[in-house]
Amino acid sequence: MPKTETFALPEATNFIEQIINEDIAAGKLRPEQVQTRFPPEPNGYLHIGHAKSMFVNFGTALKYGGKCNLFFDDTNPSKEKTEFVDAIKRDIHWLGYDWARECYASDFFDTIYEFALRLIREGKAFVCDLSPEEIKNTRGTLTEPGTESPYRNRSPEENLRLFEEMKEGKYKDGEKCLRAKIDMASPNVNLRDPVIYRILHATHHRTGDKWCIYPMYDYAHPICDYLQGVTHSLCTLEFEDHRPLYDWVGISLGFAPKPRQIEFARLNITNTVMSKRYLKKLVEEGFVHGWDDPRMPTLAGMANRGVPAAAVRDFCSRIGIAKANSECEYSYFEACIREYCNAHAARAMAVLDPIRVTLTDYEGEEETDFDVNPLDASAGRRKVVFGKHLYIDGGDFALDPPPKYFRLKKGGYVRLKNAYIIRCDDVVFDGEGNVKEVLCSYVPESHSGCDTSGIKVKGVIQWVNADRAVPAEVRQYESLLKDAAYAGQDFSERMNEESEKIVPAQAEPFLAAAEDGEAFQLLRTGYYKKCTQDGKLVLSEIVSLKDNFNKK
Image: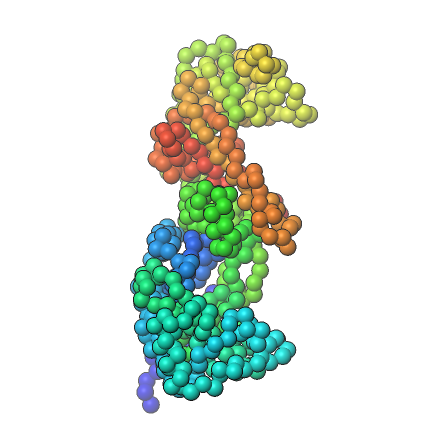
């Protein structure tokens, strides 16, 4: 008897890996022969849902030492663009993945066409003259069989002639199609003589006007998998009912070995637009600034917002791979971002809606020490210059404070972060009655780290040296959707018109000197990405400090 090879298999952490381990144990393949593919259609930008598919496909291949291809399903030229191809490749690299081979369904159009001719010759496919609407009306229901097309029993010779005429452009869109001849009484509606080729007079982004007939995804999918050498075709759960058709194509064309389709639950996140059709609508109608708008759930939007790619991968890892669909709280995703930023982002100070403070009894300037990141000792400390004129956050001063208000108020004390305790002595108003300046005194012996004043204060606020401050624009974001309570409504009825808020701010020069794209925790405010736009400092919110997930 031949010797059976044995392999040290990776420990399976999900049901997909269990299936792969069983296939390897049965001698169907070796671990390094595991091959998957990530198969986006280039009809839009990738969103957070695609991140999970990447995690599954690239991650599975990586675990077994196998390969994962980038496969573009470009079978619908009316919606596909080279712009989207380029964006998808950028997003994959941003997320930290790379592919073994870049290929397209259009690479295989000639072979897919030849396979269709073979199905026709063998009596397994026929040209149908029914319109798309008529085909839909004759497909039957879940409890009633469909009605066979009157063109179902055309001879192979006639079908070959008609199919060739379709290819030559003799017919208009929808005038004819090629259908697989399977079973109109099948309990699976997808097997009721599905359309496998349709006429579409549209210029393809790669093949130009060479073709005016294009294969349907359900037909091209198993063929392209086979031609790439895919061993395990990992799809989201909506393709489970299509698996019998996937298998029918592979078996009818004699694929050996035939790729194995396995379905997993797609990623659904509360209060998040997860449809490329709706995302495209937001872009085209100008509700957002583009596909990479920081409010968009696209990967380009997240990269532009400053979300760390590592946090996205961590999120995908934590939610796991399941068989059943479920919905994840958006606050859980935010918690993963916040956790990463907390560990890696430098701390800095900026004040929103700034109020000017003058320390009437302080002269000159001095340096005070700040931890770059208190959670990372190796990050060290830096110097921040303290002075007579300061800015504090507009929310940290109140003329008529509520009970238990521990920030600055007239006659009250507050501590300035890593500096002194100050007391509000007086307020200067402008001609319209608005606060123009707050006059304070400081407690010399109260400096942080060597406080001997004996004064106890509960409030600690951030500040910026007004003589050195840099004007900034702070951009804060909320969900594009109002809330999850209207889940039955169209997204257009739930749009949050106030999802972007722009606030004037004053920032310490440390932020202006930083590299564009660097992430910071603005003390008591949130995590922000530093940008420069038209010479102006912009601080774009990555995620707030508020942790809704852990509170739940």
